[in-house]
Image 1 (cartoon, rainbow over the protein chains, first blue to last red):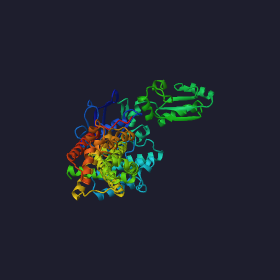
Image 2 (image 1 turned 120 degrees about the vertical axis):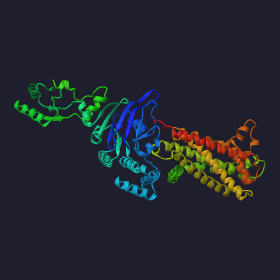
Image 3 (image 1 turned 180 degrees about the vertical axis):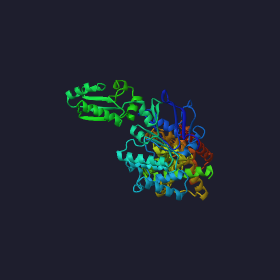
Image 4 (image 1 turned 180 degrees about the horizontal axis):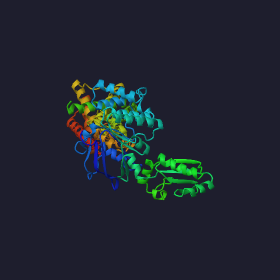
Length: 323
Length: 264
């Protein structure tokens, strides 16, 4: 394959007069994890459905290619290159886990013996060997999701779409899923991941695009996105109002919050900056009850880019703190 | 492998899936089997004496012979309600979305349902037939060829109704609606020559009963098993079956080829 694994230009989709995707451009390099991040209803699932040939884009969309094949001209070739694990599990609940896997092996036209081997290996890898003979409808959420991914992997797809793979999973299952995704990337698979969890995108993705109101609000690496919202600061908290007042007069550049008895000092959180600050506090004889360092995280980016108004608790813009 | 053999392989894979479903969860099929068997017993043992007078004399055993062909076809109608319901149910499953994103022969999903349902319908017909024989149904000197033709007609009829039922399942928003939409498939036999002869019906109604698919099929089956006159009914029945099967196939395939319904 030459060129990117996924390239979409001007992706559009509307239902009636409701526009879900309003001209989205996406490029995903081969062998990388790309995360489409956005709140519920932003259009993430619609994007996955279109790129995985499940639904057709609006005619006004530009050229879309997946795995080097044109989506409109040769959807069957696209399907042969991809694997999809949707938000709602795509397993057949009426039959057993092993039967689900063999169904996939047959639909990928694997020879009988190879189908059995691949199936057994994947069931083992995803810790489902014991449950293999039970109907999939009896599986827990985490097990269903694992079976779902295992089924997706039967055909060894080079591009995998994971639509909110960890939504509704407990923390352990979630970390297991992350480990699975990392292993896929190690094998050279391209992963297109949608999520509403920022830490998940931060943890896994090489590049992140924030989808908001049907358009890409920002795109880049996690570090690049965080630089968009300079919200890094050190926060001092006091219990004694007098100490709070004294500290505020010593640290004139700090933003003070008299109700919470806190001071906020803009800082990138480097060791040198922290030492300078601590030295100043010592010199002024100030002892805060709590000192915390805040680096901007994707949450800040997310809220800044997608919120109509920033909810409480998000640091103010730098011009106020850096006074 | 050629694309035809791949298509055949996908169809047989999907058939295996549907047969697994039917074997694990036979309750729907068995429930639908109850209706024709109950009607058979009801019309023979409860209404039998009166009804047999309606077919121009004869006793109860003559009436058994009269209604069995209609009931066998009604059994097929009843099984296909199950088809509509299970297709509609299936379409809401995530696995269907997965199938749509795989490089498989797309209609195989439907073909699997259809062949599975036809096999179930034939099994049901054999079971209802066995009950009929148990309560005294006997063919009057049908030759092996006529038995074969009767079986062929039943399979063709099942194929036709099943493709229509698959289409009904595809356009129904949920299983209940699918069951309701497919209801005519079991009600139509009541408006045919299954239970009473056409000439006993009021004149204005007779054309309705005469020109619907069940009546020619019933008359043909009667002719094959009981030696009554078939006339044009044989060709009419085959034409109806082929027409409905082709119509149902293209209708269903086009419904399935489009974008899936947007879950609201």
